[in-house]
Amino acid sequence: MLDEALANIGNMNQTIRVYDYAEVLTDGETASLETAIADFRALSGMDFLFLSTYEDLEGNENGDYMTEFFDRHGFGDGENRSGVMIYLDLFNGSYYIQPFGDMNGVVPQESAQAILNGVETLMNDAKIADAVLQVIDAYSAYFR
Image (cartoon, rainbow, N blue to C red; front, side, top):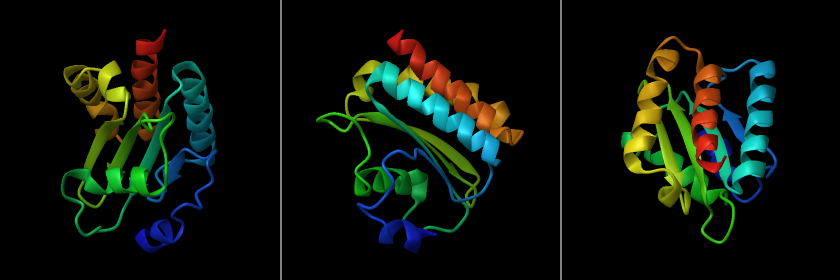
């Protein structure tokens, strides 16, 4: 999986925003998330991604792969490549939310942490799509 992702640097389909390498989502859930993300992007002018992995990725302490994935594939909108990303690391049993660019100034760190904490039960119950939709809705509230 990592080799595939790295081989595709600069070649990612720029309309896809759900990268479910761990295969935790159904096709319907993926489509639903893609639609919700497109709506968020239209509302905010910022990017949003979901990434899941299941392998042991060297150097992935604290979800570091998420930033590498975002940066290497050129995600983010605007001059500062702004957006937010949810990363589910099944190998380590962790999940993360990371703002990029101007998103850091829109959603305060304590609010981002509250959003992350708010989906803990859903994530623990393997209701991944519901958790991601809740995060999208919470971030969208900052732009309404």
